[in-house]
Image (cartoon, rainbow, N blue to C red):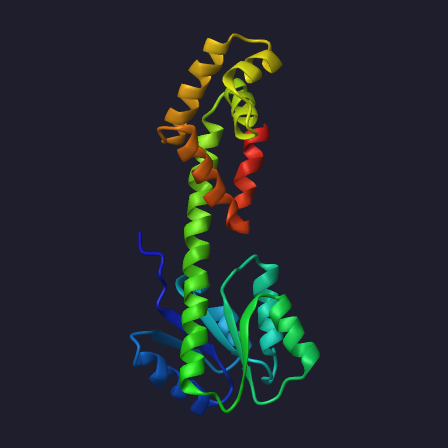
Length: 216
């Protein structure tokens, strides 16, 4: 599966800006979908198919911040590059709080915009991969029995098989058996590999939720 989404949505009431951005991004192989206002963007844009949104901060009707708030309320994680000929500190702070990758002042410098868009696309790619990894981790963990999860919890905090057996009141060979089952279900060969897998999961906030399934 290709996680890289090369479509970029441009939302700006100024046609000249939309055309400038579209022509610029085309030079690096990116495709734009242009919208003259926030309402049309929210109504027509297939958000899951874009890797980045470029929003004008101040537009008639819904502002860029309004659009960003709407996306956030729906749980959408599309990275946003906010642009404006204006913009005071509170607006910039709010845009960044809502997850904007950056805030650029008009007139836009071409290379700076390209850099910020590529940064946003990378963030989107990382998020999609982390989300897919989270789903796969959750599936593997949920395939474990309750006892296997108990054993895994103890092994992950550094308990030896003997210590885990003593705490659970079972034989050491039983812990060894459960460990073998855990490794098979998690599709790794050693506990070291499993620890690395769990750590990579924790590297992204979007993936951390999978770890709670171990506790069940």
